[in-house]
Amino acid sequence: MASVRRTSVAGTWYPDKPARLIAHLDGYLERARVDDPAGRLRAIVAPHAGLMYSGPVAAFAYNVARRHQHSAIVLVGPSHFISFQGVSIWPDGEWETPLGPVQVNRELAKAVADAGAFAVVLEAMAEPLAARITSQIAIPTIGIGASPACDGQVLVMEDMLGLNPNPPKFVREYAQLGPAIEAAVEAYARDVRERRFPGVENVYPMKKAQ
Image 1: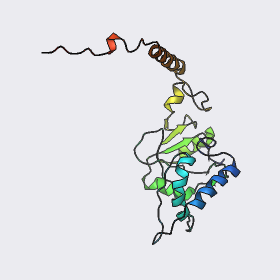
Image 2 (image 1 turned 180 degrees about the vertical axis):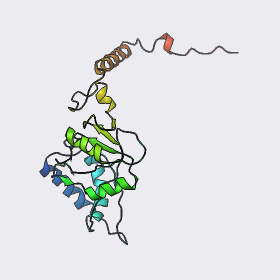
Image 3 (image 1 turned 90 degrees about the vertical axis):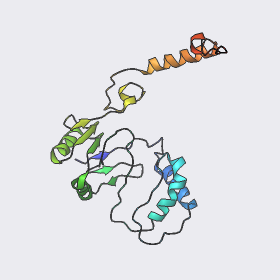
Image 4 (image 1 turned 60 degrees about the vertical axis):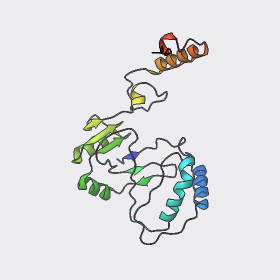
């Protein structure tokens, strides 16, 4: 059973249609003219944001990278929602993309874990597979839509507080704060329009001369 890291922002941060995505990428790469740096390429640093914002700049880095041969590529990025010390890795299987799956180098991932990875985040995968991975590796697993057998669990706060109108299947909502927040904002806007805010109790009077 293959472990698949599902796309989470395809169709929002970048196009989810292959032809449209390819057109965007080809356009950015064509316009990003750059000379090869001297020496062997070992790493690149590229911006990470929505494609329309980061793509034109990131294309310069990837234009250099694609001219070189690589036996493996290691992607290093920030954790958007989970705060932890150390490194988390995807240990096996593949990453889903609009252009097709990308296979994970299992041996390299294991070597990174053996070298001292702090934890593995298992996200949106079949429960038996997440349980099996947890039982077979020495470092902790953190589940998000994975298995109760994981060593720890995490949810995005906006999801668990009921602020996401379309939460993923693995989310359990522990509150419904959306209506309360919406009502508070509407009340604030109404008070401002009707000049009931700020009130006397919210403003500062002039100080009397000494």
